[in-house]
Each structure stands twice: as structure tokens, then as C-alpha cells.
Length: 77
Picture 1: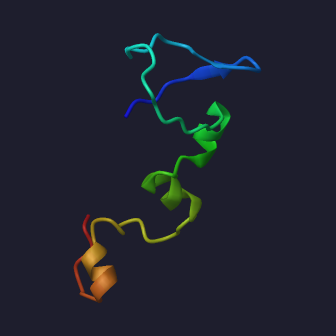
Picture 2: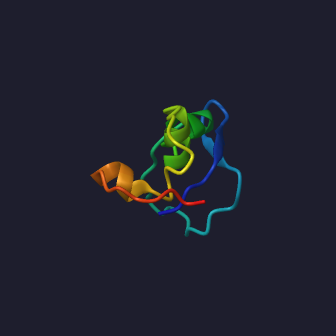
């Protein structure tokens, strides 16, 4: 599968780059405006985590097991 960009001139789609296809090759097209591409892309894990505006202790990542499972651990210094 290959993604290509084209412009519709009112009658036909004109590819921005040459296609390496023999003449009269039948293909399947799915039409999506290029502007929709960024809007439909899923958010990354980091974007999702930041959007949650989570608040926690400063040693959260280094003492994760203690916070998740209630284990008593000495603070890291």
C-alpha cells in the first residue's frame, strides 16, 4: 500500500509525484482531505498523559511499586 497526495482539478485527480504503475492499472482509492490527516491522528501516550494534568509526589516514578501496592519504602534521596 502506498500513500500519495493528489490535487482534484474539478474533473480528475492529479498526483503530486509520478506513479510507478503501468498504464491502465486498476487501483483502489480512498479519499481523505490532507487537512483531515492531522486531525484524525491518534494522540501519543505522552500527549494523553499530559492532557490528564496528573498531580503526584515528586518521587512517583522511582517509588511506583510502593504507591501502587502499598509497599513501605524508604524515600530516595
